Image (cartoon, rainbow, N blue to C red; front, side):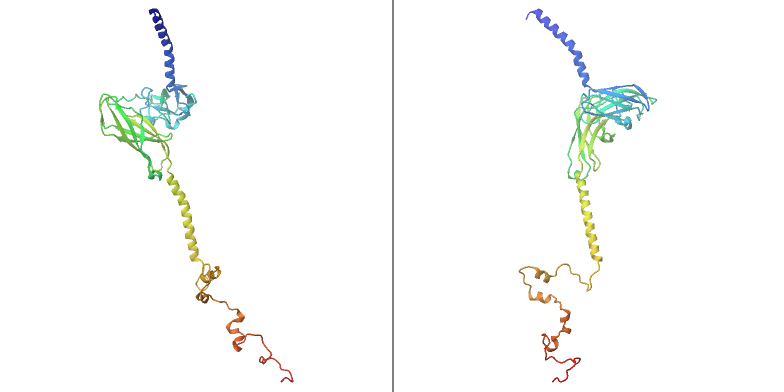
Length: 363
């Protein structure tokens, strides 16, 4: 290729690069989550419209008004510095966009304030927009602490699993594992972290966890912090990690239901009524009046049972033990053959009864 042709190709490539650069920048910016407000200032009791784009499709977002925050620093105090009771949830559409009305409420800390939008589940993403609550107190932001600063370098994860006791309602426990790096100018010794657990969209409950060790400037360390829930906890939880008043990471935790507790109560509902029924029948059997003689027979007696069994011949002792009923007119006292030893019908030679009249002329 001639030198003039090479020059023309170089010029053409440079022109194309200049034309495509704005488009590439626009595409990159469009992928970042963004938040827009219908008003930059409003009074308490009114409402504003919050919209945004660049979020994941079908993502659940939480919208809050937070104090002592600016977009450059985020929300250092976490959701504890936000008006959580007046927050709103919204789900993005198929293109990652949303629009939602938000009532204006006072955050628990002074302004400067922001409208904070963050994902509730899945990969963490958040964005802030400056907002002024009319009539709310305004104070300067606290100065950033100089020296060592920790930053999470890897994704957090929860190690461990539940056991048989957890299945029966024992407190679920895991270990929060992550890697942090010291991006400050001085060493960080024995840092104290705050580990929070939140159920659903509620604010997390924080607990201090201290890691023993020193992280030098520019160095990193792998940390493991224990996390434990209350007994019988189940459902969708979120584990948050905070250091220096700033939330560093969040990790979802899906806790299974303790089915052993459910099985226990099912067995109780079956066994207790059966036991009460048996006790009641025993009491009835005790207080029921007995027949005359004081002996109560249950079912068939042995001789009667032997007579009813086919092919079984009861012994002589069994026959002797079997009481025979005597007809009333053949009782020993009224037996007609007891006197003469004869059980036949009366004959002509029977003695004449004194009450029977005699004929005249009879021999």
